[in-house]
Image (cartoon, rainbow, N blue to C red):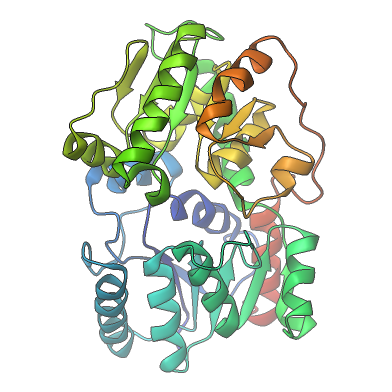
Length: 360
């Protein structure tokens, strides 16, 4: 029997979650050897390779190189590549993180080969049935063998959907593990020298619904223009966002400084010294909670409701952004409250579960 545990990374957001498990494994008594597999979905070095060493992860032992194309094309080509890789090198267990197309493809390929799959970050639901990420996370959960939920409510959602309680475990938020691991060094490093701590806001926008339609992107830039009159903004531009801006012939408004994509610890240093963050990223909603940072989320719904109920995130439309920035700057914003299991020990709980199933 193989002793390999294949951790599937398709996109940048998968890496800090997998890193939490990777670093927890050595002391857990798990009889499996972790192997990092990169599907290739995020292939730009700034979006993947540059993040490995800062997170303490090695270069992928298996790199499939599958990138680009429509959702269907990327998913299908990744399934074929995963199948070939696992026919040649069969693991004992596959771990997928998150809800991107590469994670879905790896899950389907593994299960059709009879390989068990653990879904890290299972049970998240945003109530947007046509959103590609929502479709992916529901499909992954439907066939995964082990379901690691970030909180008790997500675990309850899975059990209510008919999953056997023994396959579901609320382990906590792996993103918070990695944030806590790197936060002291990030605070010590501070933001780029040209930025005064507390004197700027951070922007991260990349979701298709926000940046693909030129009209929506233009409306967002108009709202950001108003916000930047109150507070200078810096925007580490996701390649998708940069491409959409260029295609639409749009420039960033005055008061907004573009930055390249940043490795995780550098982005954390930027975020930790900010006054607020304007985002459409679920991961940033979680990080903002951990930093007690006002999070102005430009989305109609979120699959991370705890960041609304107990965190610092509030859902907004572009028209409401200026008033929200004014409120945050005035201190009229909710403070973060404790979220059960978001304590930096998610990796330990996942590793402990694996030690039960695959003891050394």
